[in-house]
Image (cartoon, rainbow, N blue to C red; front, side, top):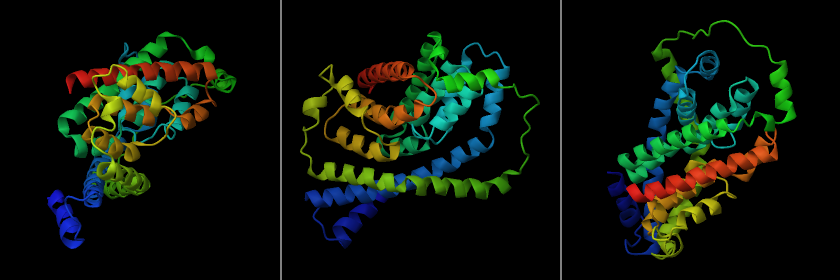
Length: 322
C-alpha cells in the first residue's frame, strides 16, 4: 500500500518519470520515510512498555545481589538491546554501572549491544530487510555483546579504569533495601508511553531524513556495481575494509540504515553492509572521547580492538548464512 502511495505521488501527482534517476530517488525517499516513521513509532511504543516495567535501578540491584553463573553478561546485553541509546548517549548509563560497582565485563556487554540493537535499528531493519534478517541481526548483536563482555571480563581490566572511577568505587557505600516498583495501572502509563514513543520519533527524525536523503541520492545516481567492485563478498578483505572505514565515522541507526540499504541494492553483500553499520554506530571517535572519563587510553584501545574483531567475524558469518 505504501509503495502504491509513493508511486502515485511521485509518478502521478509530481509527474516524474519512473525511469528517471530523479524519479527513482524521490520515490525511494518518500516510501522509506513513511514506512520507517510508522514502524519506529510502533516499536518505540512496545519498547516503552518493556522499559516501564524493567527499570534501570532494578537491573543494577539484580546484577549486584545475585550469582548468575555467567548469565549476567547475557542479561546486560539484552538490557542494552532494549534501551534506545546510540553509542554516545549510552555512555552516561555505562558510567553509572561502573561507578555502582557492576563488574566491568558486564558493563561492556551493555555498552557493546546498546548502540547496535535498539528500536530504531529494529524498526528500520524490519522495514528494509524483512523479519528473518532482522531476527538474525538482533540475535547477532546480543551474542556479540554477551561474548565480547565475557572476553573483556576475563582480561581483568579494572586496573585500567581512570583514577576518578577507582576512587569513587573505593568510597562507595553499598545501598541497602529492596527495590519497590511504583504500582501504576497500565492504562495510566499508556499516554506517557505513547508520548515518549513520539518523542523518540521526533528526536531522530532529522537523522532519518538525512540518512534516507543520502540513500535516495545513492539509489538514484550511483551506478550499479560501484560499491560491489570494492566490497564484494568474493573479496575476503571486504568485511575488514568496511569495518575499518566505518570506525572514524559517527551516526546512529536512523542515519546509516538507509545507506546500507542502498549498499545492498547496489550489490554489496548484506554481511559486509551490516559490518559497516555496526562499525559506524558501535565505534566512533566521539564515543572514545566520552569514555576517556572512565577509562585509560589503553583500555579504550583494547575495547575498540576487541569489538572491531567481533564485528568482522559477525560480518563474515552473515555473508555465509544470508
